[in-house]
Length: 118
Length: 117
Image (cartoon, rainbow over all chains, first blue to last red; front, side):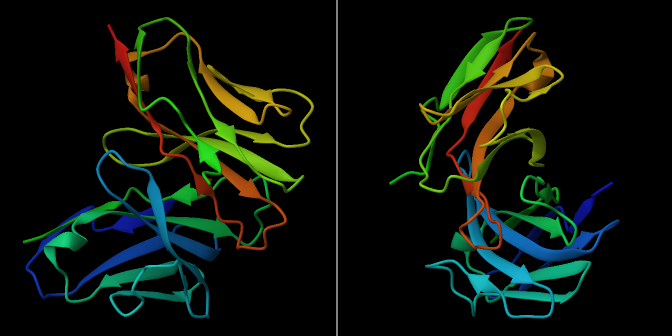
């Protein structure tokens, strides 16, 4: 159980275009989803926290107009990278927490999306 | 100040031997949890083991065990009988229960483990 599906696994887009990444909880309802960015051989950097039905909370230094997060349902959150630039190339990974989870529950992660902006 | 410190950027271990990956943490919250995740080169994050601040015994999960020393604020991961498939990045993370921050995890910088045949 507790499967998180992230799509696409990898995407190449041209500079100036937008790309949408989907994160779905397949067998549970995710009240909270976390979006991370990871540079090669570095740790996970939390970008934002999204709660279903409300606006996402962005971490300091993350441009909310550039990284649009929508959590419209209990099973789907999306991250849209708008007007992508080569410096946005990175590995993006989502994780989800269920309504029933307790403090000692691990987060469930998607498999990540490798974005390359040319 | 770093809340989670992993001092070993890279580690090597011989197949079938045991290896210890270090993690120290800093918190003033008396209630917290520590998590270890594995990230293979494919990128997915795999949960390995959890230790709660009030747990009396060290956590164990198969070949993984946690050497939890609360007074020293350390939560080292021990992998016994290393296998080639254990080669990956390993991350230590902490959740502070009273932080009121959506239960987000605070991450260490990770340790890259290479298992030699």
